[in-house]
Image (cartoon, rainbow, N blue to C red; front, side, top):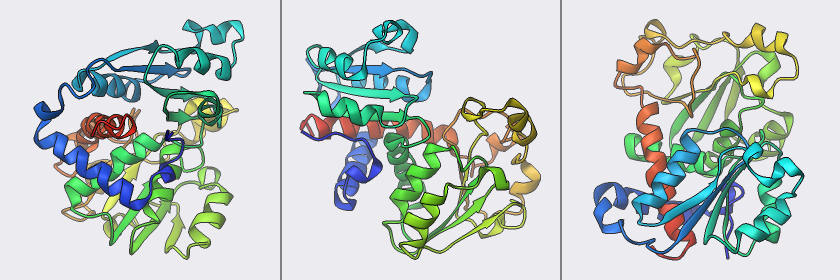
Length: 304
């Protein structure tokens, strides 16, 4: 039985199979509409979520399966002190597969050690968010036509942004990928990511503070919000939250075929006027999240 805790739990070949299956689903959704009939997905969300939880639920329903679960720790027995290990032992009796989001890093890994059903990490603290990474890769592959030979700019909160950490880890496995990391000093990528991933693998990257200076070099611009919930000090959040705002004027500096991605939700880091630009694909990205999660459920339940 396979669990998905990190985006690296799939090999490059397995990732290619997953993305190919997702593209098959996009082309012929009806062909897959009853593949999970009689199967149940448990969504165990100890932390608020809109897109991830609902896209998992939509994915299972689109496959003909059913769903159960909770959308906050307060509405589960965690509020009474029940451990993740005990919760997953019980849920394993009720469902065939589980998606878990938890504010504590490593909680889904702990769940996988006690579970008798496949566990998918739907985000653990500032650590990993593999299915968002799979969504990002599908978006880039489908709209750019390739995952190699690209320059990717990450802009905003690179310290706490688990989507950034996961996507960097995944994309260093493809040929000729380089990164431009755009953030204030306080929100730079963690040292471990710089040393153990970028430096260790001789990946080309540079760290800058000014988006305007580098936007013309990018094939992909991955915007992120400054995450209030990850800050210990509200004054720091207020000081940093409006550091980067992508607007139409900045978009004029970018390549005609640059893609703008964002894991959502956005606050004000992308001006609404950018939504009408054909290069702004973050809502399409959210749609692709359903298809890639459908593909993942099928693969993990061996129903593909």
